[in-house]
Amino acid sequence: MKTMTCRQLSGPCDLAHTGTTADDVINAQDKHLKETVKAGDDTHVAAREDMKGRWRKPWAALGWYRDMKKAFADLPENPA
Image 1: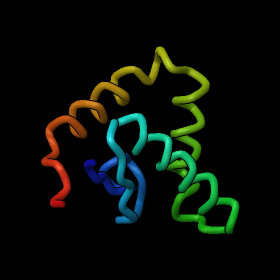
Image 2: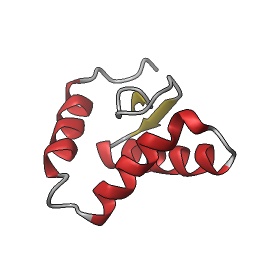
Image 3: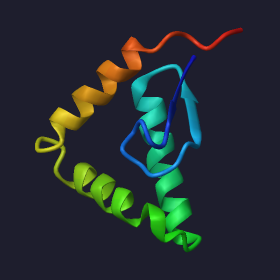
Image 4: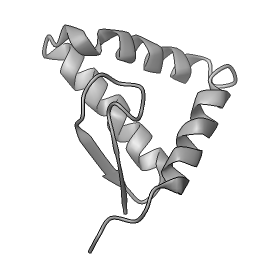
């Protein structure tokens, strides 16, 4: 298991997302952004719009996705 924050995933806060793969934390970030914006947190709107754009145009967002996968791979495992 590894942890990345909302900020590490191009968001505005330090909420931690934990997962066994980069896709786990990216999906957790997507859910976090959806829920936070729905709850009225305007600080996450720009990040949410960026994420929606990446889901709509995955080929165009491949660079971001590769960067996040590499950043995740470079992280140490969480302590037991």
